[in-house]
Length: 431
Image 1 (cartoon, rainbow, N blue to C red):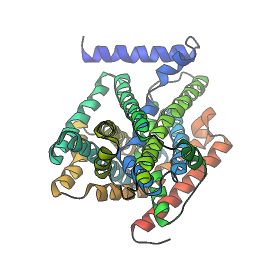
Image 2: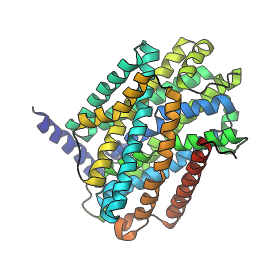
Image 3: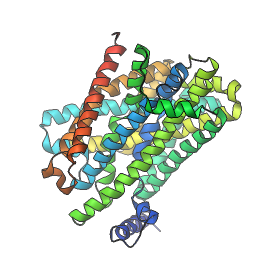
C-alpha cells in the first residue's frame, strides 16, 4: 500500500469518527476522542526546557511561594489557546493568515520577521534542553547531541506524511511520558501538600528577584509560536458543514484544551514543588539551571530519580523542538504565503544552537536571552488574536462572549506589562 493511500485511509477514519460525534452517533468519551490532538501538540510548548529552567530556579530559591504564578499562567494559557483554536475553526484560516488578510502589508512583514526570530529563539531553548539531556544521561558530547536532536526531531516531523493523527498521537505520547515522569518525581520528592494548596492560591512577591522569576515563569509558559500554531492545527482538521457544526467542534475543542492545558499545568506545578521540596527544603537555594538540578538530585534522591528527570527533559526537548518547527512552517506560510522544505527549516533553525554549543557559550545565559527575545514578540499575536476573535463579522456564532473578551484584554495587558518589566529588569533596571 502506498503512503498516499494509507494517508487517505487514516484521514478518512479520523474524519468519519469526528462526523459520528457531531451527528451524536458517538457519545461520552468516545465522542471526544476524534477531536483530541491539536491542544496536546500546542501543550508541548508549555512544558519545554525553558519551563524547566524557570520552575526549578523558582522552587529552589523561593520554595512553594510562587506556585500561584504557575496557576495564573496556566489559566491564561487555557483562555488564549482556546481562542486560537476557535479562530481556526470559525474562519478556516490560521492567525498568521488572518493577519495577512486584514493588516497592511508592511505590518504583516514586520510581524513575520519578529515571529521568525521568536521561532528560532524558541528552538534554541528546546534544542539545548534535549542536547543537555543526551549529554547528562548518555554522556554524548554536546555538539554531537545537537546534531542528533536535529535528526530525531526531523524524523518525528516526517510522521505528518501519514496524516495528522500519527503525529498528534506521537506528540501526545511524549506529553504523557513527561507527566508520568513527574508523577514518579513527586513520589520521590514527597512534597508538603498543605503548602502546595496554600501557595497555589495565595499570591506572594517578596523581592525584585521574585518579580523577575514571576515574569519569567509566565514568559516561559505563554509562548507566541504556540498561539500561532494552534489556529493552524484546527483550521482544516475537521471542516464544519454549517454554523451549528462549528459550534459543536468548538465545544469539543474547549474540552480538549482544558484537559491538555491541565496536564501541562500539573507538570509545571510538579517541576516547581519538586524543586521546592528537594532543593529549597534542604538548603540548596542556588539551583538555577538544569545541569545543576540533575547533579544535585542524584545525591539527594538517588540516581533513579535523576534519570527520570532527564528522561522527561529528553521527551520535552525532542517534542517541543518538533512542534517549534511545525509552528515555523505555519508562521511563514501564513504571513508571506510560501513555505520551504521541512529539512531546510530544520537545518536553518538548528544552526544558532550548533554555533552556541561549538563556541561553548553558557546554556543558561542563552536560555535567559531567548526568553527576553520571546518577551518582545509575545504581545503581537495576543493582541491580534483578541482583535480577531472579538469581531462578529469574522467569527460568526463563535465570536467571544463579552466576559471572554474582557478576560482576554486583561490577559493581554498583564502579559504586555509583565514582559515590559522583564525587559526593564533584564537590561539592568531596578524595582
